[in-house]
Image (cartoon, rainbow, N blue to C red; front, side, top):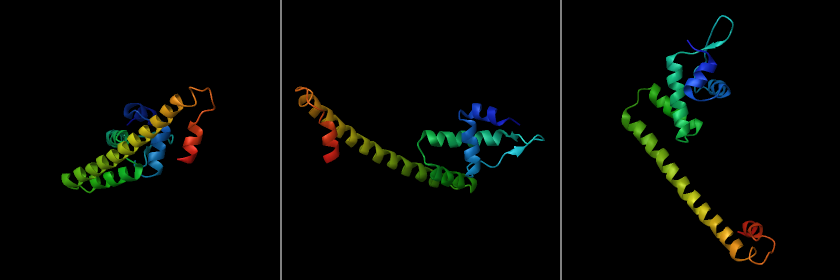
Length: 132
């Protein structure tokens, strides 16, 4: 059994994160030692590492709960693959939205450099953002 600090270190997260995951049911409540301190085992480390990796893939916590439910129910690989395929599509949509945002910001900067910056005028970006 390991302490919460050691679990956090091994899973590369923070102690408050572990407490939070316990409070929302992503991690089972820890066993307690005689003094009331939390104690964790290998399965806790494995689950926390899985959760952390899911967060690395930018999965929201509610989706991680869904994934953990799939795992707990021994769902076939196809359902898990479908789950991650849907996450990939969500990521692609966000990438597209970010690319559009980047393009818009580049237009603002370009307009600024070719307009107000050249004439030492107040910056147009504020007005552009407020009207578009």
